[in-house]
Image (cartoon, rainbow over all chains, first blue to last red; front, side):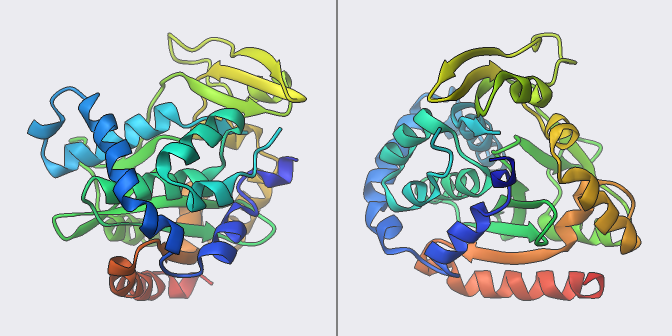
Length: 70
Length: 216
């Protein structure tokens, strides 16, 4: 169990994704935009932020909503 | 417990992937891919950067392009590299500083979040109790493990992880101080999730190899 932390996650990604695009991810992009648009709408003042602030805010939001596996 | 839902994170639409995460938690690779997908859907170009070596810690984080510069954003442990004014430091400047044995400042955010652990003891070891709102994690049993609310940060993860010490030894053997940031100088791979970022991926990978080639 403990060896699962950090280890192997990359290998799974590498095995599935190689270096480049993944078909399902590209296919999902329209739905992904809707999901992210809802996330953005929940962030006060997002549209008025510069790109740097938008990126940092999105990271902060993803970190808060993503459950950690430890 | 169902920690390894990584394939689902990269094979499902984000909403469905997020629903899966809520039942089991995710490791760094899935979180980095998730953030890269969020950035892409928000109009930014993004990649994942995998680094470390077999047998010691490895990590996956997210790279994002802002105004023709590349920056690191880590959503798994919620950190980033900043200068003294709190402004983001570009990724390649971070690598160059590390090569010069100068670790840039790292922000550590102390926000409560959900974590899935094999047991409450491990959750407690991962918990940062130094911030005023932190305290001990609040855990409930789930699927043979524990679902906990707490503040989980890079320093506490390093304190708890059994591969931290071997990783420090690896770095010291190669002339680096015992600081985990230097592991970033040991690249594994940059991954592009979308076809329009492949060419840049190749350029980024080449640049990373040039900066780090003397470390391996």
